[in-house]
Length: 475
Ligand code: COA
Picture 1 (cartoon, rainbow, N blue to C red):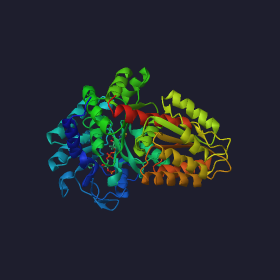
Picture 2 (cartoon, protein in one colour):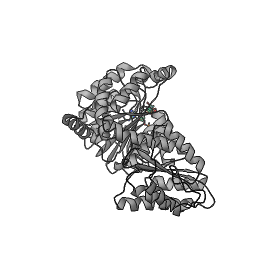
Picture 3 (cartoon, rainbow, N blue to C red):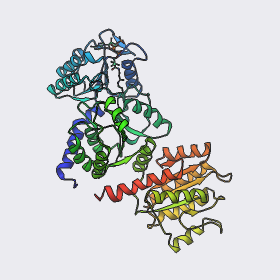
Picture 4 (cartoon, helix red, strand yellow):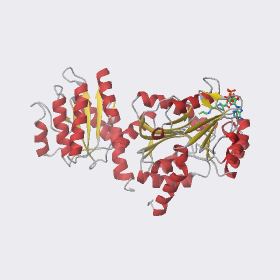
């Protein structure tokens, strides 16, 4: 499917229409609670602690102030129309809140409340959507944990307070999983631009949020945990995603592959899990990368978010351990990655960075006595040679190797090479104890993707090649 000018215009206008949801100038929280630990309290606390610079209006008829912020008895009393109204009152009160928000002139409703179509309360959800439409408001939710957008220091969720800023946008249909992953990504050093809970998708869904992220300069990769689309959205998904994936990679984990999983989906968010083969075919046509596990989702996303495009489809592996090299080589066959047949002149250059018993073939084995010096030298040779499309560095822990020094050396070589105009993906897998973990964290924070085992690095690399040489070129 070709990307038309109209398609590009559509994406731009979707961005303009949604920008105030991600970067609101003011946020009201209806149901802001006086009691620590309650959802309406935690959302206000997160908003205040995240460093959000816009205006915050707690709404609760029983309080004058909460957490030191002036509280309003209803939306009517606010001094302005808020861009976003977060709704955290029980389901039976949501319609009157939506009416008030509409009359006030709010733009978006972020409805945290559960108890709608996911439990068969379809009519109430319809009424909520009709009310919002009447006033031209858009709805995120209901049945969500909120929205966070790092560039605006906005954490309007009842998840953990901190978010590690980065370039991966994450849209999730599962709330609990999303909240859990907020904490997990911080621990793993994975930076997110945004996390958006879409829940029942009564109005805004994964397609429209992706349209925004496709145009968002702070997001490099869109990741989605999807259980299913709403009925009748299949064609639009195919059309829009085909356009988006030409611009930015979209990586989806689609739950409900099994029959039992599909039944679980129906009772979770009320969406259509549908036959898995249909989704599989649609993802392929739309250029969406489908993965099976959370680990794969973020492995592929990190590789895509922080790597320049491979120069060609030929990978080079540098290792200090033969076994790790063999495992990575097996993985290249499994995932369809081409290994470079190292030309003689390049072999000669690699030989300068290894003892006589090393191997300049691919994997380039600089042997167990290698230090950061041999790694730096061979990596620079690989980065400066146009026949090498990208590099995976494998490191097994040895007593002669200082992991911290090695991480610093890798960062320096990549930086120096970039300054000389040589830019290609460098993925790193370090196998060892705490020193290896610390070194990987240092690399990760400096945007070099790292992996605990070689196979994961090769898999992520295979998706880089797939994205740049197939999906982006429309093959
Ligand atoms: N306007 C403003 N505030 C109002 C109000 C109104 N019309 N009506 C009630 N309030 C106040 C309440 O007095 C209360 O404040 P208080 O704690 O200081 O007394 C606060 O709003 C919340 O109302 P409350 O009735 O105590 O509701 P709750 O906090 O027990 O539950 C929800 C509200 C939204 C959290 C709950 O209905 C819900 O849906 N929970 C599930 C959320 C969820 O899991 N979502 C999906 C995540 S993935």
